[in-house]
Length: 323
Image (cartoon, rainbow, N blue to C red):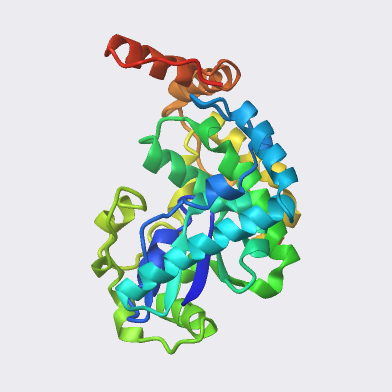
């Protein structure tokens, strides 16, 4: 079994690419495993809470690493090998030679994946970051401003991904969303050949026929388009429909900087010019500003957690002190 990881930000077309690749008989996958994230992501990278007390657990696990010959890297390497064997079992059950793990949040552990899976192949799927941000809010929040919830992807995730690809460029097959939907047979055919197989071009035109069990993965795109569509390539600018959204878009673009965009294969000035040219009205303006302020308060005070705890209390479910 050959293991392949697709790394991308959410709403970059990774489900489309995954389904297109899985139209090939010798390639298989499942929706989104996520299983390696709690193994490889370090708690000190951010603030985490649980009933069992994450901080105390982290101290205990570090003590455990000190008692193991080879320490943390040995433990994580062995755990990754266990997961790899399970992937091989799934691949055998599906009768395929290549197994794809497509988990968008793996951008947070991109460097670790490259290090702990030396024999794996990696596909990085890039998309215009402003298009990604627009699609996240339109798809995950029904166009209601909740951008703070996804900053970990838009900033830390993208930074980790681009730096890892740049450092290990020989390990990555680079695909851009815009080129994928414009020339699906050419782009997917290229990827499949680089994975060591000969593509069945005719089957690539029917990605909607591939389905996975479970709740994860993009359901909206599959329902909206029966085939590959280029309609989403230029639709992102419409999201930036008022002065607040345009200002945020320019701030985000400036925060990333021209070098990151160049590394991804995009032209900073072209994206900025298209954003400037977008007409700004007052649609969603009041709601966006209120939601923006609420988002900042939520980041500081954890309002989302208080709300969940209150719901549990009112419905008679146990409420514990999360640490």
